[in-house]
Length: 192
Image 1 (cartoon, rainbow, N blue to C red):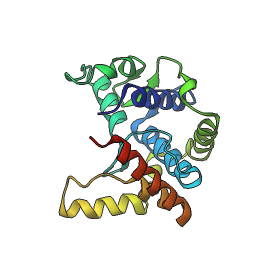
Image 2: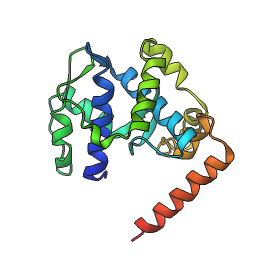
Image 3: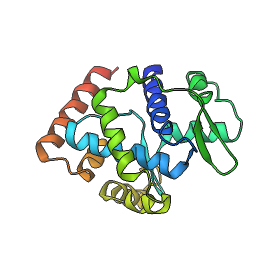
């Protein structure tokens, strides 16, 4: 389960992206912009923009928590018992019958650093006008293909790892080593 702060950060990033698309944006484009921004930021800075888990799906990587929120809003559903932290996120977007997502609130940019905003802006400039089907195809990179291959043996191995995403973005070996070290430190401090 994501922490309230992680959820607020994901919400801020989603709303930040959506504010660039006044006429809304379809699921695929939203998810791919999130993925490409994450991939490039990881490769250059060794950090995630969002702590959302990207899963391999037929049309490419999908941020799991964001997908859950978008589907709950689309279907007019409330979160399950452990989803009370999603209430604010759910009320910040709307989804129409064509699966177009719109922001109904402004992003809390206090959650997004200037460097992260710059990366998201660059990603939107690069991919914002690209057709969603083409974006889907472009997202079938080495991280995605590795997860798809693992899923052939075990359907539960559908997660694109942070290191694989960074590598797909062109991260150098020293950057990958840095990411690995940070993950080990984080795991150590989060151990029970």
